[in-house]
Image 1 (cartoon, rainbow, N blue to C red):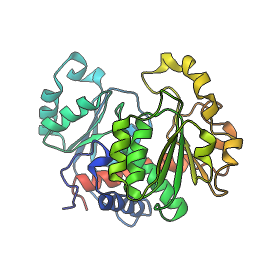
Image 2 (tube, helix red, strand yellow):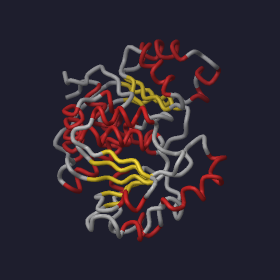
Image 3 (cartoon, one colour):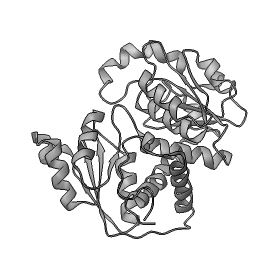
Image 4 (tube, rainbow, N blue to C red):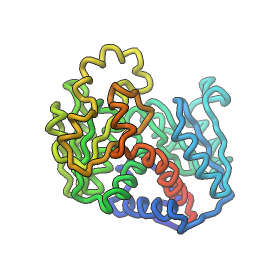
Length: 305
């Protein structure tokens, strides 16, 4: 039984540095076909938000290992009719071997974890998106051979992606620079948590995207208005336009720098078409790695290796 067997993943802060490193090694081995775990277990997906990559990658991961997936979105379950989270968590625990939850409030996810007797996985909340950052770190490691000492520049909203990148980079020794407009910086308490977890990472917050990009090994961005913020998109556009990842910003980065995006992308807003489709883009490798990183997580939490 592995060190993560039976545990929850609500945030990357739930992992130690060595546990995160082990997960990334396992993801690489799974991608290379060195391991072929098998299971008869069932994963439940309780998603209150739309999803493509997270839903498909978790489902495919379970199917490839011989397991089953139940997609329990709010429209087809009693969750959508107001059943308390604590009741749903306890009932689902009697049927399922793990539950992946995509919801708005981190507090709701924590309630699932408190009352469930099986592993609960954060498949995205407004505060964190740890599964995405597992794939991001795997992609960085594939490209550069190691993580310690790399510098990642994230330009855009200080949202759940920025928060999880802060934690993931801190645990792996990646220097992280967050460039965001005033009023859109990451939450101070998450920054403080990342600083406490830091394994020698330099953590920089700035409003200057050029300074953040200078010499960076990866330029990373996300949409400027996340799910639930669509009505703000028009107001945000002029504030965020200087933070677009484009040729002029890329010219400031390390010559071997790569472009990352968690997708879906709004082309010609937060990133140009040319960079998204260009030779320095690793966006499609990054998206594929959702499958391998999440399979590694399932293998670890379900005790399959």
